[in-house]
Image (cartoon, rainbow, N blue to C red):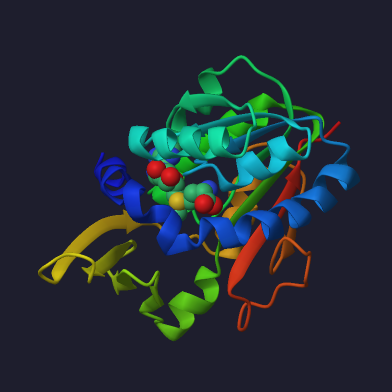
Length: 250
Ligand SMILES: C[S@@+](CC[C@H](N)C(=O)[O-])C[C@H]1O[C@@H](n2cnc3c(N)ncnc32)[C@H](O)[C@@H]1O
């Protein structure tokens, strides 16, 4: 799977690129609101990456399971959890395979633009049905992805340019027929000789309408759509992200 190779290669620099340490406290505060409002006690964080949200949840006292398809990302996640002194149940699992789990949780999270790695409508349906099967009646699914309505309308190619002091990262899209090619160029200044690497993977840019329909088809009630985890109202034109909260009917 091309996305697994992509993240296996990225795992070592992922936390520096996404500013893990700086974000952890902020994400914990944001999730605390959802935990309390939904009375969550058990959560599964799907496509957990290096464990940012799983660690935030576990540190709030939530019984947390976290899954990812990349062994290297999970390895880094384990190290991060150990460093923060929290216990998490780790699963090496593709998003598309959650239907095979025998588990029931109060909430499933799929955050940080992970869902676009599921590249077509059939696999999206299998993934969402898998999440649905994991939830208790009344349980919640929270999905966070970039606002592709805006990105597609404006043909926005640049996802981000940032630096962790040692490495510079340029992230950008190339628009293909229905998919996006996502490229990360890394310039490493920490070595004797400047080193540039280029990594690529494919994404499906789900729009709000596509996601809403897929969730309803998978058995969820009509989702609420926000701009962020603070529940700011969503705007197709200005929001950076789309946060989608759907419930499994009681
Ligand atoms: C952009 S990262 C987001 C990680 C984390 N949720 C966060 O917010 O920091 C996307 C993650 O999805 C994982 N991933 C990509 N395709 C996947 C798939 N088909 N099944 C499971 N995980 C996948 C990658 O290994 C990576 O850890």
